[in-house]
Length: 413
Image 1 (tube, one colour):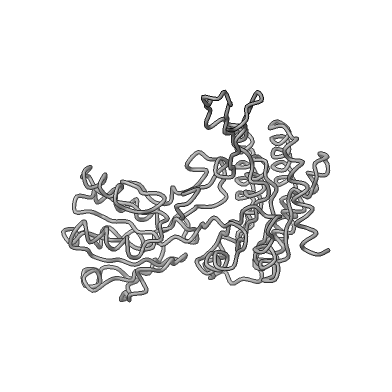
Image 2 (image 1 turned 45 degrees about the vertical axis):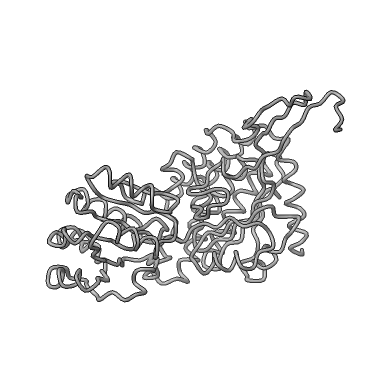
């Protein structure tokens, strides 16, 4: 079958989603969640095929790996999405014109959402759940690294859809080839919006080559600034959590900025990272302060401060002023998530006002940038752009709107 035929089938199936009630969509999500748990042996076996082709030292290995606990979490997230209010049919504007025309603006699905992603098979389930709940069909294009996992995941979804009498073409998985990506990005009239999830290279490729609308997500060069008035114990906990909770995710900490007045505390601030063998790329002043006190130390280069490491690695830079920290973030940040650790509320509020990012934290780790953590259910990605959705994208961000106009024979002069 040609991919154009696949796109056509999904487009037709998307129209049928409008006939489903929210209760029917929720029943599908709960049934798929049950199937994930019931068929976890099959899913894990497919995932093992993918893992066998990747070195465990690869930073993407953790993203690729599924476990019984992670599958239980994926199923729980899907059930949680089913409990959320429907984002459809919300009346977001209402007015009556002087001529008597009655206008209402209501939320509606995009139609068909295309997602290009890398070695993250959980995305397959997350995208399906959010798209179905928001009335969208989805076209999925995973990477070769997770090919077996994605094929099995979509098979589980499609089997459940057939059992419930729902058109299985509301979800489609494309071949894991560059050619399939190119066709997807050119599917004008079939795919209403495309969302890339992955590293900077993938996102840049999609943005530069797409003929369909694109929402940019994912790439995160994340900074945390430890201010002169930061609490040391709080800072240690926040930095360790932001860096080491999961190093392969886009909200993980990449660069720590420390005010010069706290240079004497630097070894204590980063000390807990040694438990995870985190390599620090330190600028000259930070290197001098940590030399002999921190075991995994390297000299920073210019590239160190603009790198999304996705590994047990982090840059460290000493700044002389609050404004220097803001300037560094403006230059090297990616607009994803930034944080300040300080007891000075005035500095914190100024930081949040001046930093240009989707999520800006005060005395909390950037690891919270996540749709589930924000109470949105699962997420389809973290948008770093300004036009349209920004930050974690949940159900509401998968809708657009249309105007309904009721008249009584009015004509325009």
